Length: 345
Image (cartoon, rainbow, N blue to C red):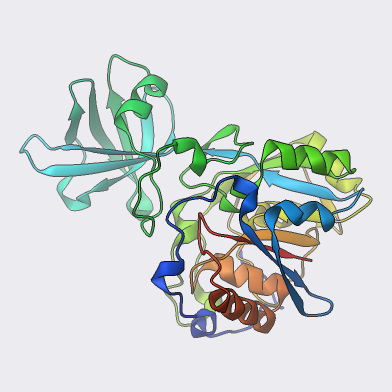
């Protein structure tokens, strides 16, 4: 769904910036909350440089912090075709009866009926083709997937990360509970249980929504004009209890990540009011969008020409955001999934 009549026409090149390769974080910071935090004040256009553990200084009693509790369930499997050629299967999320949505490589050489041998314990059968290059595959094994995949699969990190994780849980948030994502909602990777407890102790209410992140979220804009880009659907859920907490908020609604923003705004039925339920969203937030629910945003630093950068620019103003990104490059912030964070107030 697009923004409506208020959408501005913008050239996609306005969301270009030069990202030095050495600033793309290859591994997470330890502890999680010691990453840097750039604070953007929309009212004064001021920029502060802090650490993520300073976050409680900017939130106050009555604020509602909204987390996305999706869990990455994707696995990358490397195997062989019956002819001996190499094949890869990226399991995105489980369906039923041992079937998954998946991407396969080489796609053209793995039609329906193809089989990929991963190990003596696992074979993958391609059963169907869907739009967008997706496949339906079946796992053939005597072992349940939850035992098999951690042993045979790899965490499917973004392609710009070239180091394998020693601990796969570092690509999960500490509050990840609902399996179904192809990628992590990375703005939440900075939180620790202790930091969340500190926020609760000072009167911040913490609630969770679920949006299962698809790989399409990360694909760059391919169109000359920003508004011409088409979003793929992603499923979200807001429980009645969480909707009631948001609708009764006495303070600000603080979204953790662009996925939380899209969920809240997709479910908006008024100012600071959302409707409970599960639905598919194709909401594409571009400059000119009128935010109904979200008052503040915690996010990471995004790739050039991505829908996430467009959303952040819609929230904080294109010129302000691009100036902040230039400053982040000068100050040697760490970018992308394992990088540093930004708080926009």
